[in-house]
Image: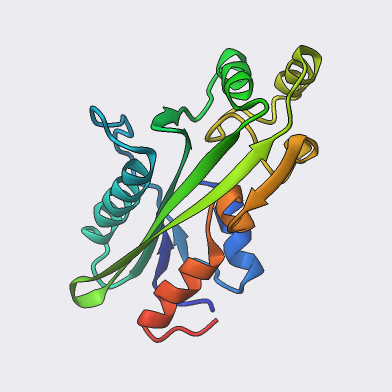
Length: 192
């Protein structure tokens, strides 16, 4: 689908590539600039959906006749929200925390459309890491691959060798749950 007024409210190249895989090509990419700080006691799943809705609304207010797709991915260990790792130290801290245990990846997705249409979904996947050695963590940090990623890793890269199991949507872990996206578009009559 190449809808003349389909906007992706995200700067993520992974989301753009995933959409292209299913034939969705936005006419514009307009990331929303907003504070992504979690609220006090906010759960990872709640944060993911709140940010997805806020990002979509920010763009839909300026483009009311467009279809606007927004998303936000949050990695959680229990109730703890892991950062989008911006430094090598944050990548290492995330990997140490997830080493040998399970964590959850939540992505909230929202679709805004003409006439005030809005629909949203939340996707949850579980990822189990093997126990990582200090050398494995150091090597991954040096690769730079985890920078800017929720939880400090990218499943579609080198981190795949450390993942023992996943449960749920793989595309969700990459950054955009395609099944849920297809369901949202079907609600506005777009079949993929």
